Amino acid sequence: MYSAPSIIGTALKLAGLYARARKNADCVLVRRNVFTLLALPKNFDGFTMLHISDLHADISVGAMRHLVGISR
Image 1 (tube, rainbow, N blue to C red):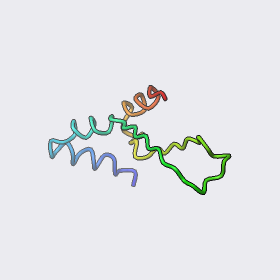
Image 2 (image 1 turned 30 degrees about the vertical axis):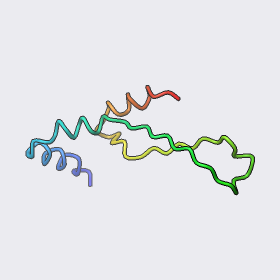
Image 3 (image 1 turned 90 degrees about the horizontal axis):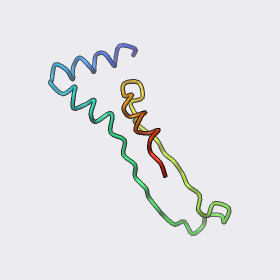
Image 4 (image 1 turned 120 degrees about the vertical axis):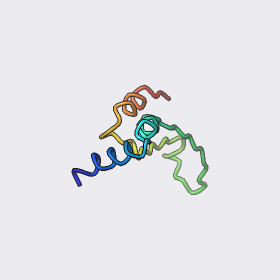
């Protein structure tokens, strides 16, 4: 399990896709979805939910920099 990042990195380099993979890992996408739930308690009106996934934090310092720089 600990060797998985190096195996994946080596495979991407051999396939010529390493630079593209790094660029994709550094890209942080913000998607805002607004939806209405009729049965939602009034205490949650205007409530904001944050979902963060698949950041590749272990290999992407760029993604972490982008994430910190994102504002409302």
